[in-house]
Length: 284
Image (cartoon, rainbow, N blue to C red):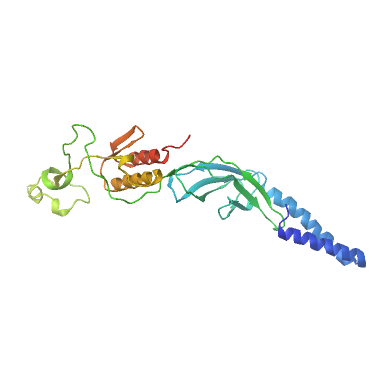
């Protein structure tokens, strides 16, 4: 398909051809035929620059609503190199790359997200105007991308606590600064204030003092606890609480639609809770 520059050149060639016929000017004929030949050769090379290019989707990591999803893509050139290839969606700026033969290239494309759940971008447009810019060869590619979008987290005060289960109300001990619990072998990074110099002076090696402090009960989170004028605001509130508790290293659990997750702590538990919030009420 001719670009604006290509259409302008085609119109110019037509005007020059009419002038050459009218005035029987052989030099103008030569220029018209030369540019016409370049026009035809450019069409062929533009098509070849896109033909044979292979695209493979590598997936993406979950994001929060409002963030940009990073979609990783691998481009392969098994037969020839492909230069000045642009990839984009209608709502995103084009990303232009050169793909070397047999080597290929991997890049990330970014697409904004607006709401939680599964995000499926439109078909990706792949185009090139190489080498002369007079033509554009393009294709719409469906790579079956799917990105999990978590609710946009809100920063609100945590709700009250309650024991995770009956009989779990007793406090647990964790390493802290309150009560002396014993000694352990010195580890790089231990504070010098906690070193047992007496034991070291007696030739018993270098040890660090271990203290204990009470741990809080696990905090249960539920939709009923979350403030908000809409379901989406409540889910965003729960997502914010999950992140707060994780950053404070405090065990927590989530009750949602009869499903119980936890109590636990850690990256896997956090992701399980955020996934449940993202897919709550979403039709598969």
